[in-house]
Image 1: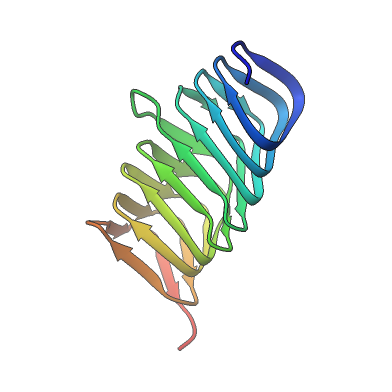
Image 2 (image 1 turned 180 degrees about the vertical axis):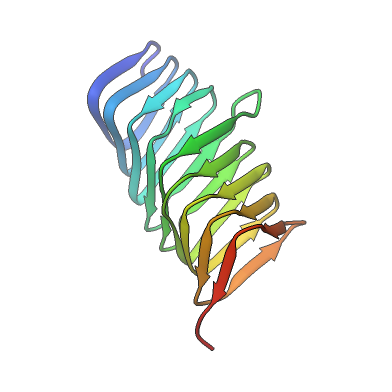
Length: 173
């Protein structure tokens, strides 16, 4: 546990960590088999979790950068005041979850597959190219303004809503 701030080029976590202050990485924050909670401001050029990496951001987020959650990972965005974040790309794979109360704009590629869950209570806008192959939308509002290609099921529940202002291609059986 760290009561103060952490700042570095790259930061990796394995195991449990609670940061009472801010967390800043000019390159990336990586978690693997970890439970990390950040109370203060979070800023990273890339946020990556693999193999049961769990990150909870309770403070304001300056930048998430590119976001990758792969293999049972969870990223929770829960600042006291919800905010709108813009990220260049999002990768949700193998039963991973992005949840919380922020709004999100994905300006570039969004890969959403293999039973992964998008559970933000705000609006998620996809403005680039989205590839969807087996995912869940739990609550919140999904707005596609880019090109989305769906090749498998999408489960929408808990009041989830979808608006398509772009192109939505359906492939497969």
